[in-house]
Image (cartoon, rainbow over all chains, first blue to last red; front, side, top):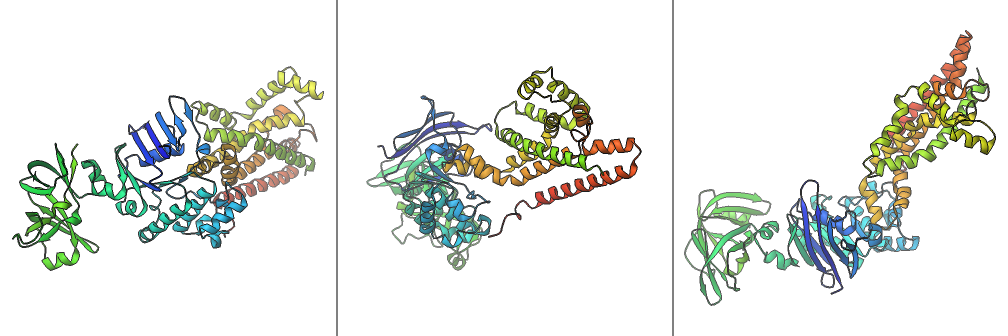
Length: 354
Length: 224
């Protein structure tokens, strides 16, 4: 149990926002942990508490069995004694120092040279931060943090300062670098794709509270409640009521329609979570496949989004489908068209509401 | 031209600037980073010489360093001399009088250093003092240069405080502006004109350099 990062603390801002986080990260299972949440949910606040840059109003922070903050005992380690390397959104490289001097800021010459070699930034060593690209700055910031002997890396939206094209390209690079660094890292993001590309494990923060933790795919696939579902970008979160139970299959009432899904023993008030990409559309309403759920509805809007089209339906309740732009064009979808939304029972995930 | 007075003013300005760098940089650091709520009181006290008539300041300094004051008595016991009407006395008065000119630009420059850079340094395990030395000071160096130049220039042109504390002793306390005053009193307008022109040119050059420095904060660094 010692190989954990434990953070149970409260911090109230003068704005009235309150963070009340109860989080323990199993560092043996997770090399990269994603701290996920919408903007304003308290992600950066939590990261600053972990780094020791802010002091919690009360609570406990412990890293691998060593207390970093313990309010009852009046213990508070300053950032210098935690060695949690903090990567700011804009990387915060020292503008008056060369890349080599930045990396060597808090370590010996040899160690710096070694890190510069490892991170492949030898040809930038003599340059100043403003003369290198955002992606290169990120590399330098990581090398600097690891060279200083950081035991934990804290990254605040590390890809947000980059333009859209390099952001996607550098995602996998970043994960590789984090793994190569050999110390656990916590990455703040509000982007699903980033969470999937970067993380092993994730914690979802909504309105200052940790709502769910677990392996990234697990959390994204099975959100624990409507707030997490919304936060992780499940497009369809529908209040549902159990109206029938057959062996292995559950019948739900959603709005005026019935939905079937796999029975995992849920009871009580529920929400049905359906990812928009799991909703297919068809013109004919005849039952001609294995799919359990065929929901009749009308098209409300069709929006092109790059190679995809986002179709909003009215099935007695709003339902969003994500299909390819080609399909949308071939089906000639327009607002007002009667269509049938097709959803496999296995694509309906249940979560307790509230 | 009264070369003796010019040389005295240069010496006074140089020593005052040196004292103000030693005293002013830590004071500015405290003003820029202290979380204390009553910081504004210290700020106001530092800014006082900006609005106080030089004669008032000079009068208080004269009282404070006189042989009957604790400071003056201590100085007398240590050195056997007296502070009023001496170069050392002038130095004390000048340092006080130019304090805001040194502290304000430096505190402003400290304040303008990106907080994230300081925090990044702390997270790398670097102590507060070392962070101040390795991050804050180098990034604020144009502000420090501005403070030093303004202190120097301000001391060069000092009149009221010098007259109150130092009097008018040739080679000891007679500075350039007092020399000009004497020349005018003696109706030696040619000499006064010459010395004044000299001070005017000097002041303009100093201000031009200051503004140029401020504009070139980053371009002053070597590229690549």
